[in-house]
Length: 203
Length: 151
Ligand SMILES: [Zn+2]
Image (cartoon, rainbow over the protein chains, first blue to last red):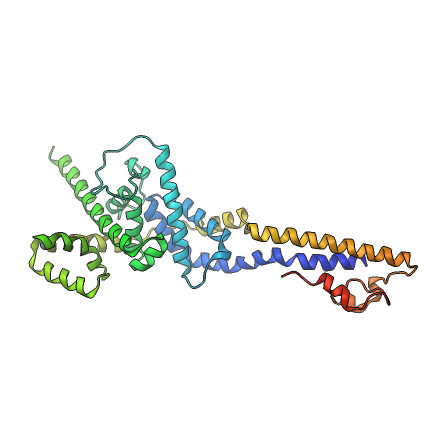
């Protein structure tokens, strides 16, 4: 009889642990479907393969931890990018705080909500392993992080301002301004690069 | 030109087709007749199309496996404060129930009757909710209330 009682108690308590486990197959499936695209995002954000992999991993870990809060009305990637942009901002802030040396890199209009030197941009010698898109990736790297994320979500991922506003938890008006100023930063950076190259040749 | 300033700020949204009809007409008309704004628009368009055609970066072959390993090793979805509270409540209730069961058994012994062995009761083995059935002392319905699951 004691055994019977224990059995009933165990079967009554156990399904709680099983709930989490039952979410795993679904999450694995969503992961397999999204990781390549999510890796592109992470790479465009960080400009570096190792950091992109770290960011991707952090993103999925957090996503799985809070998977019970995921609202299936929203596309999984939108939810994932929301986590990723938050993590990326956190990472940039953390490394910027550690870094005291400023760089002389002109970044066009520097009137962002919070002006931070991107630590990646500071390390001008950092390896970018994607040679074809290298000048453009360097330009992304030098951007104000909020502008960079808005531009990447719009032009690499092809999302609407509305979708980007949801992901970045801001207004459509702010998205519009970030994208516009972000594109101008890229253009100015590329102009600056070609100017430097030109000087190098003539001297 | 005064409208240049206004138009320039709308050029990216114009490019992305994110303007209202009225704004769109304003920008379109202006760009047609202003060389400066037209040039700026072309530059922005060039930036957008360059980003769009950036080559894909291939993730390494084992990336998915590595990330999966990290995700499922690090977090068996951490119980939220809410679920943790629930499981504490569950354990508490289970303990209370056990206590009750033994109290009933003790009481039965005192009454000089022997409790039923689980094996004797096929309905119990089949997972019926009744935990204790003391012949004649309890109606079969009442113990069920003790073990009905919370939630
Ligand atoms: Zn003009």
